[in-house]
Length: 349
Image 1: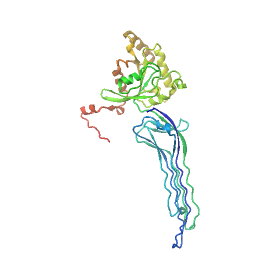
Image 2 (image 1 turned 120 degrees about the vertical axis):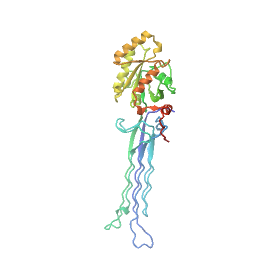
Image 3 (image 1 turned 30 degrees about the vertical axis):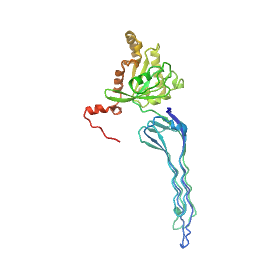
Image 4 (image 1 turned 90 degrees about the vertical axis):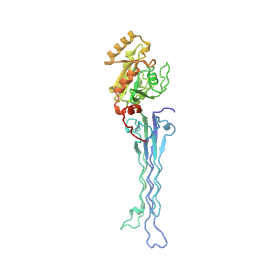
């Protein structure tokens, strides 16, 4: 299934049905009277988060969603039928933006959350509604209200606990493949990852979700490379894992490039808890490791961890450091650990 995280949709709620002008005309009723019914309400457009979706690919093939109009009222005091609603089913983590792509209408972060996007028009009143002691034969009715037409953008931001950052070929996909059951594409050329990947990693009886996004390059905020739009997928993360390629001859410049792009993107990413890791240490000897670590720590202004995704050296320590940055309510504790501690498992369907 192809990954799609941005889609443009056109929606329109249903118009209300017109009211009816009608009079009773039964043969044996001496005094008739108005009996025109009201029009039906137009259908409403909703957005709802559902389970089992992790992409907006469905909106690639259908962009127009029009709710049904309400039916007009009829004689014999019959109200018109309401128009059927339309529900846009979206994955958890979807942002709904106005046409300007800046105004956030709704941020759908919970399963089953439902948001009204366009309300259907009310049905018009029939002439029965206008009957009074001074106007016993009204010949007027109201038209139904028009529906609402809007153009919206849907943007998916993955729900993950940790986000991977780094230049292309920094070893992000290798780390994800080594620590989880995810199988992202791994190769020895830049931009191997073209769309985000998710993996569930475990350490010390706890599990959390790691998101791997395409690599950033200098000028990504201006559209170079694949741009920085993918950074939206790590906005919700509790912590960031910044991988620096230890085999690069310009690792200090590489580090500054990523930090610069985070600051240019905004959204508070530069202020998130961040763990910096010198990766690919399997290509370095002990003296080179110590020298590069010292240099990088001077630029970072804090500790730097050592790791190799290929040999898996230091990966456990990195996972433990990430776990310490994640709140317990975001972690998924393994059921075996709960059973050992004698806690009862909460039943849920």
